[in-house]
Length: 96
Image 1: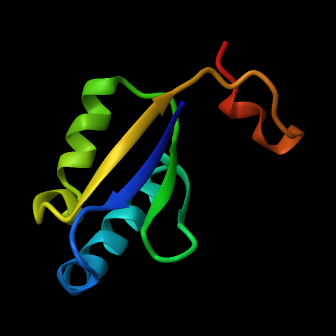
Image 2 (image 1 turned 135 degrees about the horizontal axis):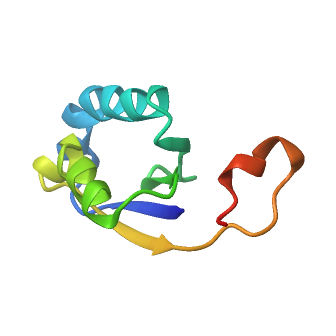
């Protein structure tokens, strides 16, 4: 899996025009089952995404579609990890 932390690199006035397109992008990949959850960091400085285990190249292609990346107003810190323990309802996220 991947844990992504988005940090805004430009002022809110430059980020705000990209919010709608970013939200649509997140909802698309949530709907496809690629993203597991998404949220806004307290203070409005960025966000957090959990992504199912996919090829890193596929993740890079998906991130390149994000309006925040296209507009150069944010950057992602990406942590790849193996999921070993979960609540029962999240068993499908475990790395074998």
